[in-house]
Length: 181
Image (cartoon, rainbow, N blue to C red; front, side, top):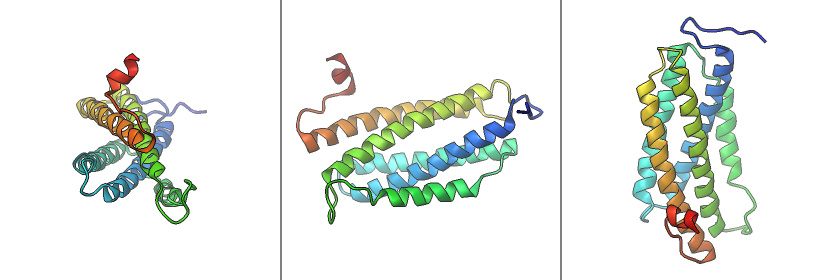
């Protein structure tokens, strides 16, 4: 394996290209999922925060694309298309209801997006670390996106517990309360 690097000092630029394209594809899938969730939760208490999350996800995707462009990393369209198709196919999953939406679907969607936000945050941390050797990567941007992901995950964890309590019963409580027991 070669140790090709960009002039700024990134080692394995081709691997960073694979990595960022994977995160970009995941961002595409996340945006599609949150669009669907927003449609499902119109007029509920979740709508304003889902709308905010959608706007932030679009901004984050644009920021990642801009970083890739700055580094000369091409967007692999086939990954974008595969993710888009995969998200559409995931809607056909078996969830115990053939002709109607299962209450479990809401829980699974909140769990999935909460987990995806943690993975996205890890990607932002990686790019933040890469900024130490590559001045073309905006470290302050990735610091802000990491903090934004923390805020997103906190809300999604609370929302997920609320949905779980609706589906199965119980008291959703706050994340800190659940961890203390």
